[in-house]
Length: 255
Image (cartoon, rainbow, N blue to C red; front, side, top):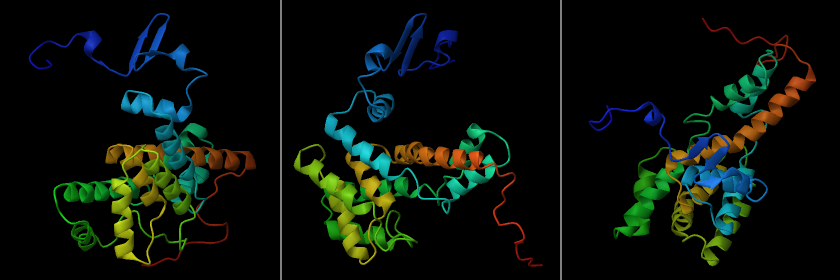
């Protein structure tokens, strides 16, 4: 039963995303043949998730965020897991799935968490709370504020180009800049700890109106490109059963 009425077989997987019938395939109401060759992949992501095609400025900003998050090398757990899995002979799909499954709250979740933080600040200031007070509440409530600081980079090399693009988008009227102002206020409060890639992309996702949970989903899409590349490189290396430590190095035993 659905709302008191019987569920028909046709309604079991009812969706507003795809219409498929013999000879017909529509995505969000647009025939796929009209999308092929005319719409970029980033715009397709927006269409599928949001239900309508983005404006050019919106698509460009989203694409910049996706490009920036593609990879961070084998020291990232998701990449290391994918590479190690690839040497087990399970195939690219399994290696990629293993890498993606490592993207959790600690590794991969900071973007979502930062969108939540920025949304809280923007909501508070919209209700009349002074910006400095809203920021102070956030800082006081977090041991580590998500989206700020990096264990490798004193200043994340992806921060400045992304924020410059947001500045340009604000000037062009593509986004409002409310989340950017909130992020910079937190950054000023945490100085000298700067925004990192999670914080910079969180600004973009929030400015573009994506829900916090979708920020993680978008990061997964982006990082999947790096996971694929590394899994394929490891596969073509011909290494078998490559463990987390070099051969001859054994973990310390602590009884």
